[in-house]
Length: 267
Image 1: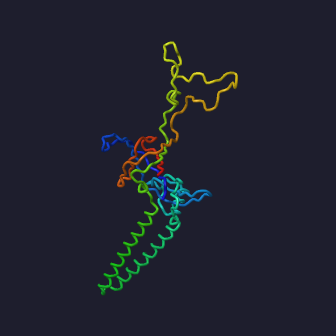
Image 2: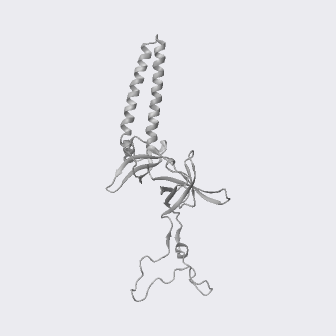
Image 3: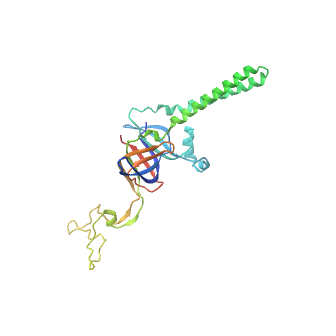
């Protein structure tokens, strides 16, 4: 099975445990992802997944090369394509067999339905035989639906890979805060706050003496703050809502509402 999946941040809430302690929670919506293909590297094996299924009304806006890639697997297009880690010993060989098996099942059942229709037209007088044939056709249709469900479900992986108590590493893009000074951006203490001083929140001197007579690289300076990928480690799953595909994770997670969140299971 895969170790990672992607979701969207809904917001934050809080609950109280049995001892009355307040626990802050972040809600992450994790819709089912689609397993597409296996990618083997010299040192590792990964699986490419599609996340956030595109609505049927917007499939026409998908570019043809991208749509053709999904058509190869006979699945609906997804917004996000990512390669994710897998658990050691997991077998994903079934991905290469799904398309062929599904086509064979469809052709067999279509032939059986045609035979049953002909028999009903030619043997109107034999009511008992026609009833048995209709029952057989219905049973075959039900089996086909079951096969189709198992095939589609085997490709889709969602919130079921997590359990309450799992520890996650969460990665997302933090909220952009625009241009910020050194006190806000790097937690500098600032200059003297007396009335006679004119550099309260400024950086101050950044140079050196005659040797080396330059500014060292990596100096903490004012600049663009936020809007960068941040990883928060060792967050615990408190609750799982399987009906709405929502994870309740203890603590805060970077990113604004609606941000794409990567959830990676640690243990």
